[in-house]
Length: 113
Picture 1 (spheres, rainbow, N blue to C red):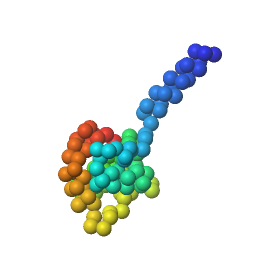
Picture 2 (cartoon, helix red, strand yellow):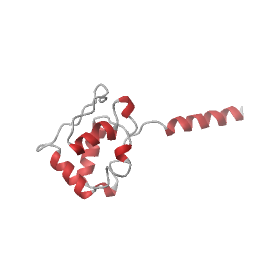
Picture 3 (tube, helix red, strand yellow):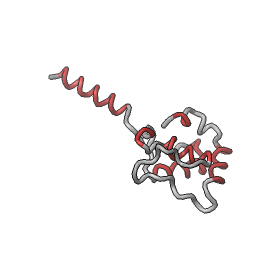
């Protein structure tokens, strides 16, 4: 019985390791412009690790906003669309984000889904 319980606990932990999760938009080093993009994507339901399901935080939301490109064809899970652009569009905010935190897209995040 104990062996079964330990095996079950390990299985649950390993499944959770691959689960999708909400992005952390409250990091101090993120800066206000990047936080605005991050929070908008989270509000629309995009999650870290969700690209294969069509709701990837980086691939289907952040990257299109930061690069000024359209959503990828694989996007978007039903109900998930890019966040509405604020007045003036995403361009100025993406530029401010890039200027204040140029490594945000380089830290491997651009390769994450």
